[in-house]
Every structure is written in C-alpha cells, then in structure tokens.
Image (cartoon, rainbow, N blue to C red; front, top):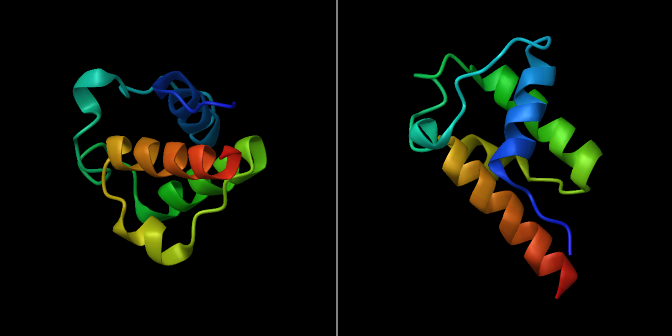
Length: 85
C-alpha cells in the first residue's frame, strides 16, 4: 500500500516553490497555509502534484476546505487507504 508522509508533502512543496527549503515540519502541521505563506494557488499546485505523483485527485471543494498541512496529509491518506481497500 502506498503511503503519503510529511516528507512526501515537504518534497512536493519544495518542488512547487522552486526548490527552496520550506519550514514544513511537525511543528507546522497545524498552522494555516496562509500563515505559512502558501496562497490558494500554491495549495492548488500542490494538490495537482499529489495527483501526478500519488494518483489522488482531490475535488476542488475539498481543497478549498483544507487549511493546514495536517488536514491535507489526512485527506490524501484517507483517499489512499480507501482506494486500496
């Protein structure tokens, strides 16, 4: 079964911001994307990369409701778990 971990999310975010290091770590999991400096366009780009890399397509209305890295991790994991069941 494929998994989606914080390291996967960090790699995708870094790729989306042009390779710059991110401060996406355990301490930032419950921080709002806006507070992390991630606007809605970047979050959308991240979800497109998740679809490309992991085959998980999140509906736009779900993406709009996801406000933290933890929520995004949980949503992707839920889709991966549901797909493999």
